[in-house]
Length: 186
Image (cartoon, rainbow, N blue to C red; front, top):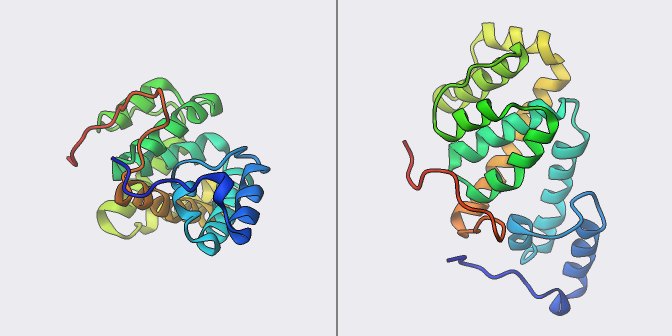
């Protein structure tokens, strides 16, 4: 059960209303999930949603790779809302269903594209080792550039915040979406 209820849009104070309207009128077209939780703290919601907007819509990373990184974050945290929200975007961006299902099931995917394999290795090393090897750093810099590496770290950080919010406040998946992730960590 969700630990904190979304605020009724008709009961927003002026600061909350300004942030709500900014989010709802942008590319997200609504205030849902973790963003609705953050609205309880409008300054946090404003700053975090601005970072999220950049990471999701304006980064230098191709959407296929960005969505791969987001799914990997959702799977790492078992953040069902994030998984459910981004699986359709990942498919639309060109990530294969086979790769998505392998990630969901906790298996190492077989990648047809080298850049996807590198992003996967990056996220895996970052979580397991809390560091990136020189070789992987060099390979990924060649594949997505220095700016891409900076953006990839930003995506990982932002979607960690998203996932933590989902887990702490028990934000359920969007209505009508069946959970796909395991209930416990591997």
